[in-house]
Image (cartoon, rainbow, N blue to C red; front, top):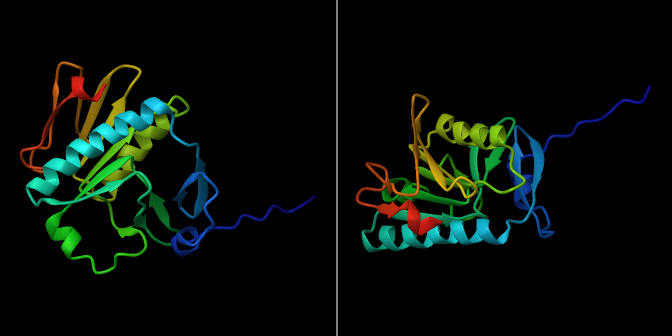
Length: 183
């Protein structure tokens, strides 16, 4: 009988890994390859990111990060997740000395866009991971149903439809985006 060797990877190893056209996340030390985003996914993520970035910059609220940005949310074994768009408050961004490497901790707001190859349970697990790691809000956009699920806590989950408006509430104060503008 052959023994199977399971090797875990660290966040530092992931950071210096050669780029090969794919995105990766590190889940409890296990490297997971993510397929490149499709056209619709990219357009929706870009819409959210651009609207969020403009508002945040004009109001000096913090920093916006694009899909390639990794957040080191747990260590030993390491977990590095990368949302499709994210926001970190000014106070938290300024308190982080290191510009290189993964952001330490979860963003205040993580945005995920469901791709055709995503399994619903995996997307929900990712949203809940963000909350466990300290995110204050997670927005999951579903292009197929044209809905947004807003996670503010394990017992505070709302589903918005195309006639509703995403509201940054106390996480991104004053930011609003009609869901119809996203889809």
